[in-house]
Image (cartoon, rainbow, N blue to C red; front, side):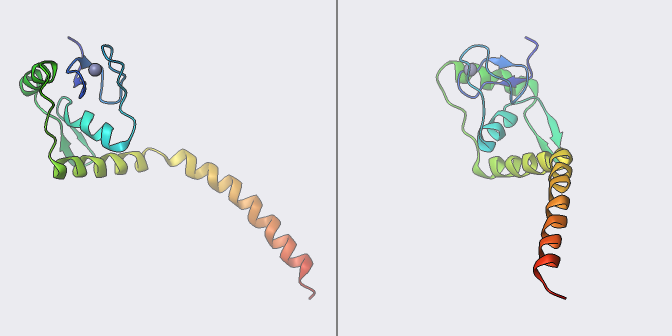
Length: 121
Ligand SMILES: [Zn+2]
């Protein structure tokens, strides 16, 4: 059992929170789905937020889900993890914003050229 995250749907251990479940092929996609997967993962920190469960607890939860008892996620904890996940994504996506600037600067140059040409001095 090498996985460190429990599938929220069937209770199978999988590689990590965002991985596709090897048993039921469920993949968390929305940020709330990812948050629920992160809650059912081995203890870690996302930014300054501690998330997850310890391994013994995860094993109990996995057995319960496999027995057909869905895990109850607290709304507050889910919200906390969603926010930590958003912050985590924001700090890890510097590349796209630079790409955006590279596209924005020529556009501004063209716009100022148009304005300069259309505006009789
Ligand atoms: Zn599954």
